Amino acid sequence: MRNNQPITQTEIVLRDDASIVSTTDLQGHITYCNAYFVEISGYAPHELLGAPHNILRHPDMPPAAYADMWATLKSGLPWTGLVKNRTKTGDYYWVQANVTPVYERGQPTGYMSVRTKPGRALVQQAEQTYQELRAGNPRRLRIQRGRVLTPTQQLLQRFDLQAQLKTAYLLALSCMLLLGLQALDLLGGAGLGVALAGAGCASLVWAMWLMSQRVLAPLRQITGQARILAGGDLTQTMPSAGEDPVGQLQNALRQTNINLRSIIGDVRQNFEAIRLETSQLAAGNKDLSNRTEAQAASLEQTAASMEQLNATVAQSAGNAEQANALASQATQAAQESGQVVASAVQTMQGVNRSSRKIGDIIGVIDGIAFQTNILALNAAVEAARAGESGRGFAVVASEVRALAQRSAAAAKEIKTLITESLDQANTGLTLTTRAGA
Image (cartoon, rainbow, N blue to C red; front, side):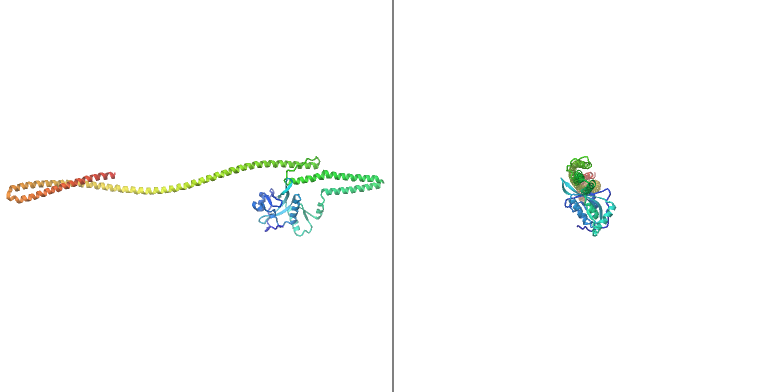
């Protein structure tokens, strides 16, 4: 027997309105478990599916309980009893287990177990009984089909309904024989006593046969049909029966089978419709997922483009700042150039005025040279008139005249240069004025 460890003394109490449901194959490996089973056991669904059901077995359970369960199930009968199970963490919980074989087309294919919350009185009784069984079983208790039986109950359990009826018939037959013998003594006629005894025996035999055909045989058939129905096989065909109590029971079971088959058929049709709609919904979700992925990829590309655009904008902003700085520098340089040009204009204007003044002065010098030349001519004439006494004066006058002529020539050249400089100064002034504007 499997010994699952560790264990604790913490009890998990089931809810009143919930059931633990699971199915196994013929070897006891779990093929289905509902959500409440997962919740109570503490195992994950993937840990339960495919695992042997005895992973829930608690060490406090006597081996005789599981031996009786498997013997009952393998004989095709359902089993009901109290079971103490162990959770994954070592805690325990009590269940009222109802296990039945599952049939498909009349053949067993597995087992279904439905566990509910048991009463506290039943739990306390089961704890005492299982402890006694583990301690050596001094009262010689026995578990049969989930029930704990004393030796007396075991003896009575051997007599089923058919055996009890046969015993009653034998007792009745014995009574009839005794009555026949008594009648023989009282009436003094052997023929009458034998006739009465024979009639009584025949009546009892006929009653036994009638009871077997009208009650026991239909009950055995109903029991077999009910077991197959409890195993989930709704494909069996149940014949109609009479209107006697046993026939009414058989007809009710037959109608239950028909109703369940109709309900399951409708459920299957609805499930198939739901499955088709679910498949369409899954396909739509898949298409939506694909579109969402494509949209996400487009958004990623857009985000990348936006990042590049942000980088470009940042670079453009930097270039704009540099251009603004250069423009500010250019503006400042232009302002400074304007100031320089304005100063140059003023300087050129001053040069122009100075050139004009120099021209005026040259004019004065030229006039003086002209007057000096005239005076020198007059002096030369007067010296010639004076004769020998004026010869020295004539020489001086000649030198003065030559000096005046050279002064006039120099003044003329200076005037020409001044005129050219003045023209160039006027041109520079015009250009400078335009540049300053």
